[in-house]
Amino acid sequence: MADEEPPEARAEPNTPNTIGEAMGATADAALNGVDIDVVAVLGTADLKLSQVLQLGRGAVLELDRMINEPIDICAERQLVARGEVVIVEDRLAIQLTEVVPSSRSK
Image 1 (tube, rainbow, N blue to C red):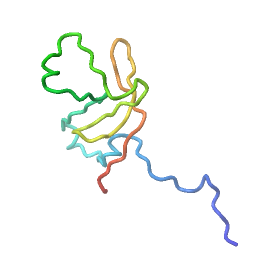
Image 2 (tube, rainbow, N blue to C red; image 1 turned 60 degrees about the horizontal axis):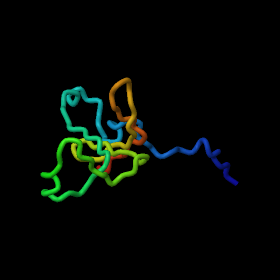
Image 3 (cartoon, rainbow, N blue to C red; image 1 turned 30 degrees about the vertical axis):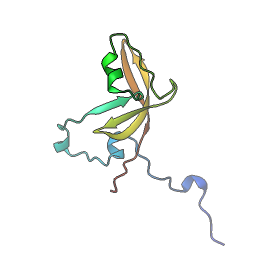
C-alpha cells in the first residue's frame, strides 16, 4: 500500500500574488516606462443621449451595483483585479481584494 501525501504537502494551484503576475508580465526593465490606462469601475448606467444632455451639476446617476459589491479594476480595458473603495487621509483609494488571472495562455 503506497503512502499518501499529507494534505499540506499537496501542491496548491498557482495563484498570482500581483497584477503583474496575473497579466503574465515580466520584470523586464524595458517595460517599466510604459504607460497604460487603469480604470476603476464603480458601476455602469444605461442612458439615452437625450438624458445625458439633460444632466447638470449635482445630477445623481443610479449605478447597477450595490454599495457593498466589489469594484472592477481594468488595465487597457482588460479586467485585472477587484477591490473596494477606501479613504486614505483625505483621498479616495482602492484596496485590491482579488487579482484576476490572465486569460491569455502563457
